[in-house]
Image (tube, rainbow over all chains, first blue to last red; front, side, top):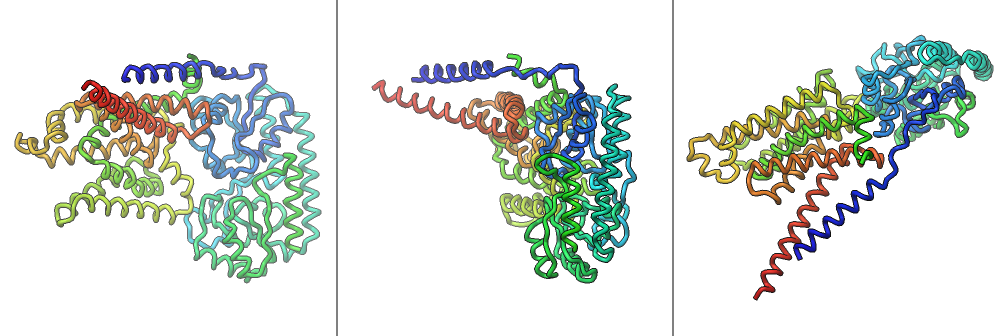
Length: 308
Length: 282
């Protein structure tokens, strides 16, 4: 009996070993000579894809729709990052869950392009309606949500085109020029859209402070945020909630905008208490067609329509 | 064969994870054997979770997590000693109190800060894929310290594990060596939380040593078996997490636990077949 078992276990182990060996070895990196650019999140990724076109492989780390503040990469994702020719990241702590992975890529000597290096960084201002005394939300904290401003994206496109040339030897100037003019048009479109909204109605209450750059560019006032922080990892407290409700009433805000990561029950209860509309907007994910311009048009439209 | 090695060769971060994991296996194998032999699982678990507030405060203050963990561990061991010495309460109760108290404190601290929730998950489950060279050096040092203390104190530890009464008679302070054991558990937990996290380090302490205890009778052999089983778990766990896209730290601990149950099963079946064999020889 004992021998039976030993045999059985041995056969089991051997077959497991054979099974493993039968697995196809990993596909070697497609050495077509094309460079690999890895962008951390989808919105920036779509711009990079348009800029680069066919000249390089562009891989976006996070699936579209995932929360960029929270998403953590798997082993394979880290492998992709550490073998990239260039990593394009947002900076300012947006990619919270990727910190260690990006550090590994840095240790592996991968070149980095940090988008926030090339724009005028917005900081939390006084009176932006952040009710809590939370030190992390103190005046002066840097806002990473730069993609809601087309003009900032233009600056990034220009800087990135230069980096492509100097670091990867790719000439994307033609695409850069096209993108620039498209972003100019987008900016003007949004200016026109917002012009249809009376100045007095341009007040924003969002899920977390994600529309700072948009507000700055198009003349909106940031009244408050349901999660009083620059990222979705924080939580709302009772004290913050009542302060926010008061702010909404005092400022006569017409609608509050909830987004990815906003706790639904909290926004509902604020809506009920203050009588304002609760509208869902998408600030951290591209629409199904993956187009940045559609994303911005939708965003502007939803905000303007919601506040009319 | 190459599929078993290739991922480590192609990715230095995975290789670092492997090295760190190997070191953790040795520390946890040695210390885990003490835990299993001396029945210290409860306090091991308490320490593994009690370091949470220390780590949380350390991160808030911008100090390395390890420092916070060390402070927590000291508070915990001190608290347990205090309660057992100054009252009639058993160590069970003392451990339970400190355990739940420290854990609750940790959660309160974390909930007070608005920057924390993602970090909490990382503290609990570790980030073995984020290991850098500095961590490896720290781990190597801690492992060497643990091995050295074990070798130097081998006799007293041996007596403490197998015949505590004789330990006292032989002139060793049982209390001192008991506390030394606790300190080593604390050290193993403090160093290992970076790799597998505070939640799972306990698994790395118990599962390999538990399996080893089923296979060996002598303390030294147990420690070697435990370390080896731990190393196999780390290696397999990392490979599995690579090929099947699973969380690395948890994969490692799962493998360790599966190995434990496999050993237990085989041992039971062997014993059953032995009994049958004995019966049939009438």
